[in-house]
Length: 63
Image: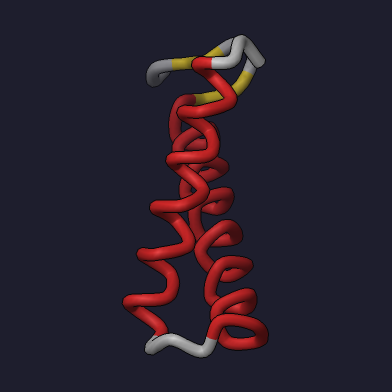
């Protein structure tokens, strides 16, 4: 038997992480295309940077 995380095999957990990352990227690409209008690569990177900075700020505030 392979590695397990809780009651699920580790492969299933890694697949779920990959799916979440892909969905987040698709949402960021949509927001860029619909509202921002930058080239796809630059827009997704810029929005991800702002999202990361927002999460860091929330962490510093204690949320």
